[in-house]
Amino acid sequence: MSQRHSVSASLPKEPARRPSFVGRLRRFRRNESGSTAIEFALVAMPFLVLLAFLIEIGLVFFAGEVLDNAVAESARLIRTGQAQKASLDADGFKQEVMGHLPGFFSADRLSIDVKTYTSFSTWAETPLIDEDDKLIEDFSYQTGSASQIVVMRAFYRWPMAGSYFGVDFSDLADGTRLIASIAAFRNEPFPTASGGS
Image 1 (cartoon, one colour):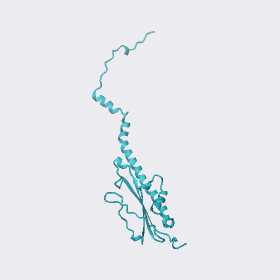
Image 2: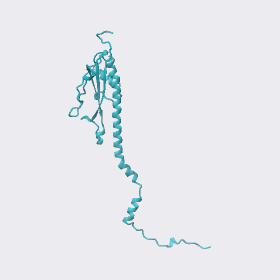
Image 3: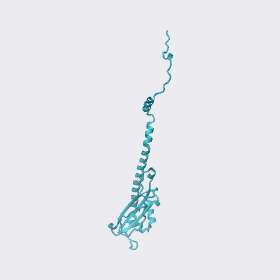
Image 4: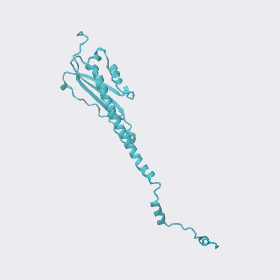
């Protein structure tokens, strides 16, 4: 039997050559192991800011719907004469409105305006925000008597976090967004205390 010898073992090895600049550049272009992380880093921050902004806008619309529902439910107390019969003052009525709002609403941020009018055409919208971007708090509480026209307005100063991201959606100087809800109605012909039952 003859023995076989490996030819490669007997050849002398060449010293390792350093790749040229062009060779390193080609190898760099072909290497894509970190490209996903870099692309995510470039896109993540704008995406997260946009996502936070959309969530904040959604919360504002949600809060507006919740406030509308609370105004509709609370206005019924005035319209049917229950607020007048219970002698609810402005603070008591505000607590009634707060009872229809979720727990994350703060009574300190809620303002209620209830006024009576002789006809629906005499009501005129007044400015709510002054030139310093502050809420004009010229509010009153007049529940009216039977068959009288009443306009109830509720205002909530919703805190906005978008200004921290450079997207300011607030309309008041304190960085809040004013959410408003209104109910205009004619009181039912409920019996008054002086008129008997």
